[in-house]
Length: 359
Ligand code: ATP
Image 1 (cartoon, rainbow, N blue to C red):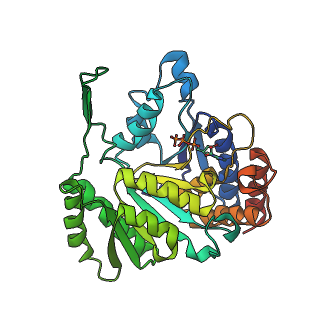
Image 2 (image 1 turned 120 degrees about the horizontal axis):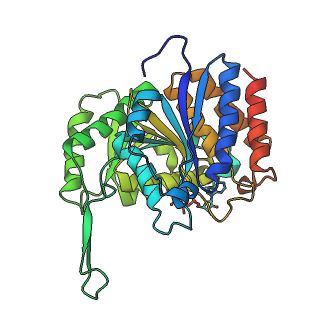
Image 3 (image 1 turned 90 degrees about the vertical axis):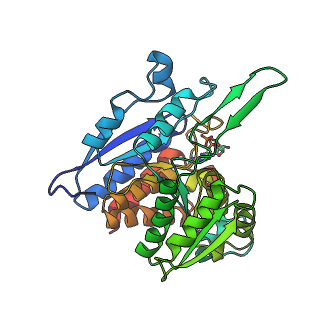
């Protein structure tokens, strides 16, 4: 990210739908507290894209949005998209997948870091034993949207969904994972595929991994089929530091990871293209079952804002947000999903206060 001396970081904020509209204002509050504490300048612009706007005037992702983000913004903070009033979630696909694909946000970083041993459903696991990152390929695979129906709605219907794996796409995500490990001083990268069954697409993953790992002799590289990986994640997560995998397996694997650290309310993610405008969001969706009740956990969104700070080069601010979330958990200042009785707003305010008070 090129530094523009003296200028503010320009952040686009898209609260979206459901609990997104509740957790993002808290994440913004926390982000502002961190920036102000560090003497940093922020320029925030909010966009009202989501189900309400779509139902009102049909807007999903405006035609000039991608160009505008590339030109005018350093990062995007997004809540969640999805609404029961839009059964096919067309707006969500257009906005979220549209941004991921059109901004070429090829690396989806999902930390699975246990902040408090009381939060994991695994027996007798210390915090340091659940501390790994899923690096998910984010622009191709089964999510490329290629496929179709034949004889739809008849007893002879055929539906196809293509699994797209390009040499360029596979190589860059594997390289990203090794670089990520190196940058953080991590020593292990595990690539997961299903090349024993998916003998073309995932054969490419196996070959590219074998090639790229040779350039990273300082990092221990291993391979696991996805079924075994999920089993091992639950059995002994301490064996993992960085996991790199395809779009679908990364989606599923990181939800399992979120389960290991205390649930979806706590899990952040970054959709990244190094050096270009990138998007940060909590892993959870719009959670219609709890939306509007003021009980959604804002910590995933807050930690996503922290990841965004790190991406922007604001390491101290990122650390301060993470530290404050840890403290909130430690002191039981949590929403009901983590066993507390605080509202979304109370948690947000507590964390923002903590960020402002501590260096
Ligand atoms: P999507 O398909 O958009 O990922 P989803 O249907 O898989 O969404 P979520 O909307 O993430 O799922 O919700 C899954 C479950 O997790 C729901 O029971 C929801 O209440 C819970 N949940 C999600 N986000 C939060 C949060 N921030 N705080 C507390 N619980 C949450």
